[in-house]
Amino acid sequence: MDNAGKEREAVQLMAEAEKRVKASHSFLRGLFGGNTRIEEACEMYTRAANMFKMAKNWSAAGNAFCQAAKLHMQLQSKHDSATSFVDAGNAYKKADPQEAINCLNAAIDIYTDMGRFTIAAKHHITIAEIYETELVDIEKAIAHYEQSADYYKGEESNSSANKCLLKVAAYAAQLEQYQKAIEIFEQIGANTMDNPLLKYSAKDYFFKAALCHFIVDELNAKLALEKYEEMFPAFTDSRECKLLKVKTSRSS
Figure 1 (cartoon, one colour):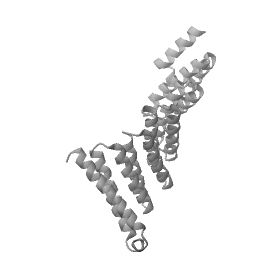
Figure 2 (figure 1 turned 90 degrees about the horizontal axis):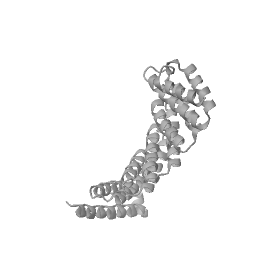
Figure 3 (figure 1 turned 180 degrees about the horizontal axis):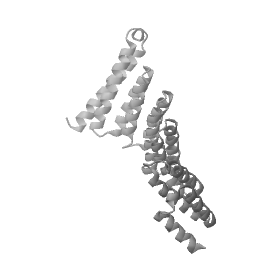
Figure 4 (figure 1 turned 90 degrees about the vertical axis):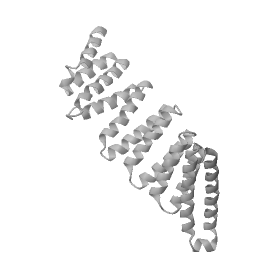
């Protein structure tokens, strides 16, 4: 079946699903089998969405998944509703980034209501990436990375939280929010320096914090460098620290 044929079949499924929904609202049918018709409509909307996907009609696919999501919620199937909203978001990403964000936010609301914060965090990252690459709104991307980090921390997923915070720090530095970047790099450096598997990364975080200090104030940078050496003696012998010391000596 070619794309046009798939679209025609999808449109027919959408129309049939809509009939099922309307039938479920009538008084007598609402008493006898209303939910069954809603369930049938959910299945039809989902099938239609997948046909639209195969035809690469991403907006129509997103809309069909959204219809299924709303009906799943009507049936009190929160997990299925959230899954359909995510599917809608993934389809809309290819055609309408803002609508993708709306659908993913709807899924996040359901997941947080269910206490599924790790999954919610993952979808906040997806939204952040849409703001980064499609809508180019770095402030909003930062907000979603921060929210993701908060959820990961609450679930003790510190490694995932740190990845999000490092994105925040990098963007904060680009936006000349140096104090914010310094605080994050210092925090992650302190958290990783005692971990046998991660301690070698700590020198990089202290190095980046010190560079931000240099941009703001060279005296504070020297003091920060001394503090990092005291906190993390292994930093002293690193080439990053030696490079910073050369820079401080030249600026003296």
